[in-house]
Amino acid sequence: MKHHEQIDAFAFALDALINRYTAEFDLPVATIVGVLEDRKMEMLLERTVHFAPDGEMDQSTLSGDNFSIDYKEDDPDDDELLF
Image (tube, rainbow, N blue to C red; front, side, top):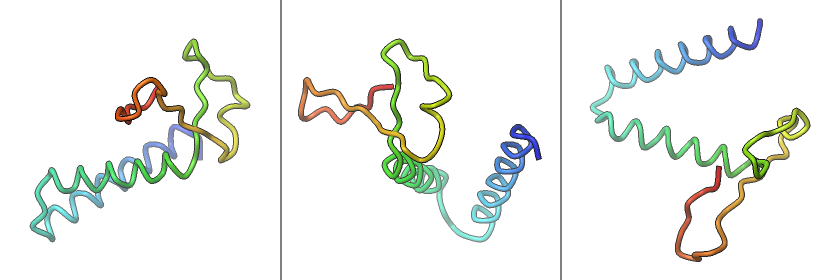
């Protein structure tokens, strides 16, 4: 299966799962979105993503599970991610 076909298959399966839970449970859309955001953050924090200063990434940066997320260091109370 080609990469874009895998993306489509994942998106369709995710849509079906969301539709199933929306129909079977009394979950507000905001709750579903919150759970998806939580899982997204877990996935991002399990892997670290390195971004080049100019916003470009080479293929070696994208390979494997060795990614990192860089945080701003100027404000210790600011948890905003740098992308």
